[in-house]
Image (cartoon, rainbow, N blue to C red; front, side, top):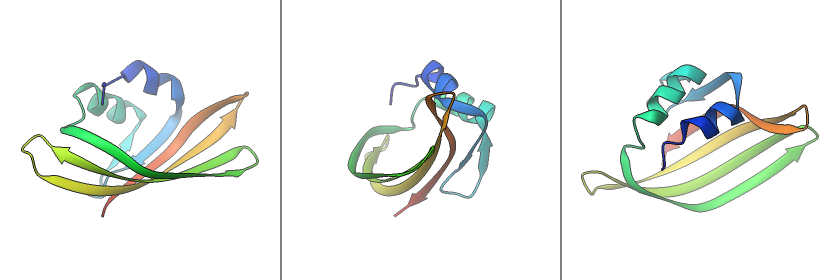
Length: 99
């Protein structure tokens, strides 16, 4: 929500891929540019999140509701994949689905 590009730059792998809810695929540089533009929503409330660990890989499954800038609302689910690389957790993949 804060368009914190530097946080993402540090916490995404160089080969990070995000699959958007419309099916488009963003690489790290495209994702960072989109992040810099702002969230495109007025608010986002995370309602549920589960983390599953598999040695040096973590799957994060979440569900939340959002309010768009025009006041309409929606729901989304996401899956983020993290890998522990040199002792630090880095996101390698994300997928967002409108619910």
